[in-house]
Image (cartoon, rainbow, N blue to C red; front, side, top):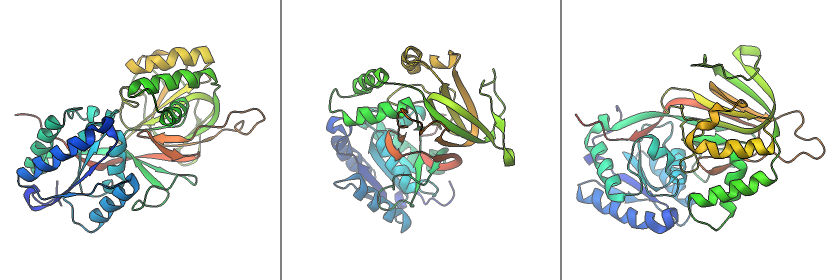
Length: 353
């Protein structure tokens, strides 16, 4: 990749999530720092007592041009943090995946749950120079109610590496984050069961930009043409997910055909499901089988604006869930999600010759 100096000449910033993987990330962080230093790389530990402080330190280092790469140690939440610091720049992101959910690393074929293997992959990518840097898309998220990112981020804008959830999956995410037990993916499953008990579909208005021709059966949503090549859909839905990659929630294949380097989002919309219908569809997402359901549709688009529909404030309506990205809270609707091609550069070892 042009603009990135040789690995040996540029210091590497490392940020460790002290809570990821039941503390495994802390131990893995020591391995990462020691391994990289032993290999001759200059390493600065940018970890801090909070994600906000760590991001501020990482972003400052990127802005000052001090880093040749930023390495995050943890799960998808740490990928999200790293994306806020380096997306849209020439600084690549390294990922040592030891969190509970490692969907982004799995999508890129990086080792998961093994800090030694993660370090090997990281070193191989660094040693390969520009051949060890893979440009991938990132979702650029904006909106008036967007929760400000921690210090160092650019105002009311967030970057998402995996998917933006704005329906039932977002409500489940919020509930799971509020639960202390059980640990791991079982917490997400239990949160889904509890959320389904009170579920009713929400009212949405979706505006798509740059809709791609369907690759196979038509998506089935009745889109209304709008100005400047846009198209809109208004109705009730259980699930609205704008996916850059195929997985969320530690292995749920919400958009199994999504590609991280095609410049498009796969927007998954499950329309007006009854409670039994949602209870049947949601578990099938683990295998990607939900796409066979009659009321589940995928629209490939460059961007989508997700906002409350005309019935969202009617008497007796449940409040729309706040949107989540990479498992992190983004804020209330409306939000605009846009695929930015090649906005994130990731350290990935080249294929063996």
